[in-house]
Image 1 (cartoon, one colour):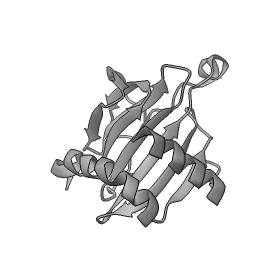
Image 2 (cartoon, helix red, strand yellow):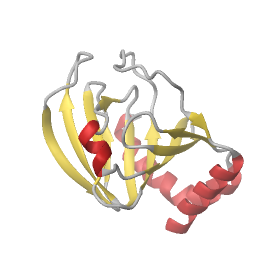
Image 3 (cartoon, helix red, strand yellow):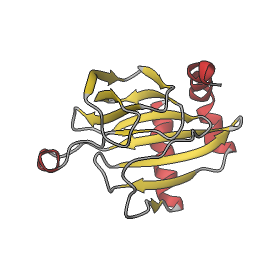
Length: 172
């Protein structure tokens, strides 16, 4: 599966307009770690397709808490549709955050995969506008995850989901 994630990501990107009308979308507001974001997701060919709207981090917030450095519990592929972010990347087999080994600027039309369970990354929007991205999620790994959140994300209501879908629809 992993070797075909970027190809599948391109398929989802091409099919998004029809998916807006033909799929049931779920959504959450994730606001307990910077950067804050809204996530929509649906099933697509046996995997999960997600849409992210990632909000800029205010200067006050970034001085208090850096963008959340984390591994993912599954392989994934991401495509940035609008905006840009700095991404820090490191590697750790433990629950301790790694040293940063690479930094990238990911901008509109760029794509990448995270195919190994011990890769960590953070996302820091570099402009004052939100970032819009598509993410595909593969089968969950057997990996203990660091930092259990003390609260669950808030479920988006139907109007919030519809507004977010409309924003993504305008980008296509």
